[in-house]
Amino acid sequence: MKITVISAAEIRIRIASLSPASEWSFLNAYAGVLGLGERVEQFHAFAPGGGDLGAKKIAPGEFRSGPGAETVEYVVKLPPARASEAGHVSWISGESGFLMLADLLPKPLPSVMLELSLPSGWNAYSTYEADPQGRFHVLQPDKTVFLIGRGVRKQTKRFDAGPIDCVVDGSWPFKDAIVLNAAMKVLKNYIALTRFPLRAKPTVMLASLPAGAGSVKWRAETRGSTVVLLIDPQAKIQNWAGELGIIFTHELLHLWVPNSLLLEGDYDWFFEGFTLYTALVTALELKFINFNEYVATIARVYDSYLSRPDDLSLIDASERRWTSGGPTVYDKGMLVAFVYDLALARESAGKMRLADRYRQLFQRWATQPANANEVIIQLLSSTAAGADLTKRYIEGRQELDIKQTLADRNQLSKSLGYR
Image (cartoon, rainbow, N blue to C red; front, top):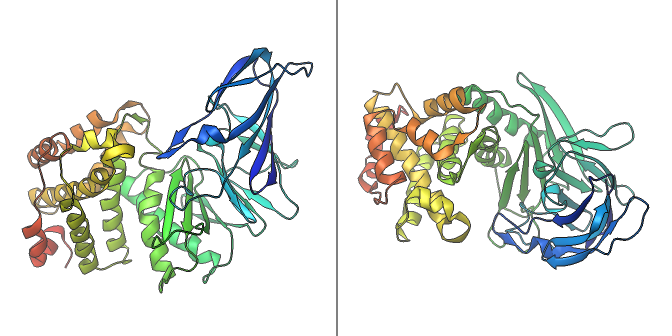
């Protein structure tokens, strides 16, 4: 397979040696970004002898040809990315960009041998290493991201759990090693928290957020073993190492949850909402923030939660995340994790915390598929307090009231063991 970057506006893809086929389907929506299939144009399918089989577009991202095609060729238009979409889909702007194979290749996505044809002076990096011929043997295309561009460079560092790659594009007011060190600090913490080593080498990619982000400082996406981080280079950040650390407390946890689990179903309330809270606790324990900032963050999320009606259970909100359930998944999910952590700490006299549930989750469910909601709810309900909270706030629609809990900071600090 060969991907050729024609310009910042489009790429050409040729896939040969396919199993004979006559129909092809491309991803049309991802993470709330719609119309991805519309970007695929000039689709041709060829017989083994090279004859054009007259492929036709039957719907956005859907093509059909005569039988027996073994080679296809097409163009993917890559319009300038909006800041809200840049971490989720392929784009090229100026002299750099991201190729996310999930929205470039037809489904299903088998392993591929990929050759990239880039403008002179450009480099390409992913979690896969190029072979001596410059080709990449991509085992999981749907989870693979390439950062390409003229100024792209890579650093690799080893620690107890193995290597980590850091791929950076552009000029920044800090050294590339700052990114690598912040990521490693968080990774070590999550290995200790989960007691589960990652199966694949983690790769962190940093690039500039496209223009037009407004007040947004950064966007991120974790796909497979790759963390894509886009930051506004003009953002006024005094402590870059601390800010990067805070960002990584959330995004790097996704390398474990959900990406290292085989659980199935819509459980965004856990892998987004609970991850937000666990990241906040991690930022506190790693001293990226202090206890007052911890409480202030929960208070801000609570204010956001109160600004909208709470009319969905967390399970229902997860099913509607990209339509009407998004704020509930994040705000209420994070607050329920906080209430659960506090209840567990009080019930066990400080001997148990939410972190212990993560360890149990990976001990039991890291290597086999199961229904995510059933497994996690059963795990969280293993104590009386946990069962009550789960029934009321995760499966049910009861509203949260934590105003008094946040007001008594001394008691909160004592209950959680932060003094």
